[in-house]
Length: 225
Image 1 (cartoon, rainbow, N blue to C red):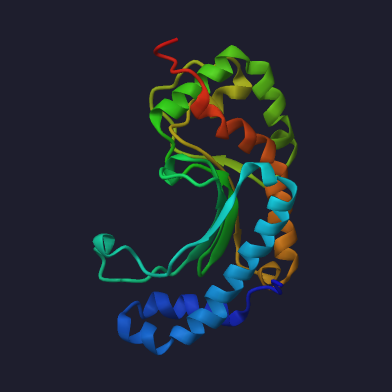
Image 2: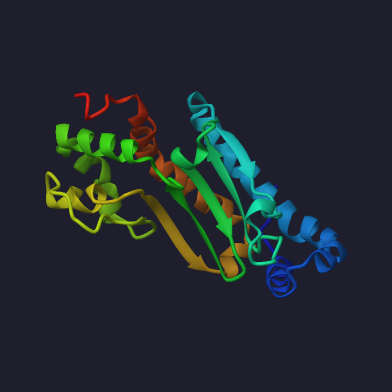
């Protein structure tokens, strides 16, 4: 059971940032496994089991990121990530274009939420077309977000604004991709088992939006319509 991260977790991340090379990492690999990787896996597994226990119909899978960067992308001479994350998602070959729940821990902060790494333009076109067809339905869906302060809407916006059906839908309508994210500096909550409760509760709150986004790919192509 997840009992929280530790000060050793934070120390490892900062030390890796300062000593991002194979010799240092190999000498401290056991610290990585014990202080960083193991608690991240425990947190991810605990949250995953809670969510899949309530939404088994989604067929979610659970992934924990690797510490090693893809060799093709090591341009800075630093072969290791200083952060780790887990995700809860549907199996997909195009995971970057599929909505996912995630939690990420970095040396100075942690974050979690729901969103796309990079939604496809066709997905966002279908999203706008769905809002056009029924803006009131989407306004009702996002109403709980307007009454909370845990998650904020994030994502690149179009430079040339598109005309949304209503002021309440405009911030969504003009995104190239988006996520609902909570960011927080590392502090005492990170070292508590209550972190699992907070993350699971956050995913429960966001699940109606996940249900809305995950079905976009089955909508008709707006161009063909």
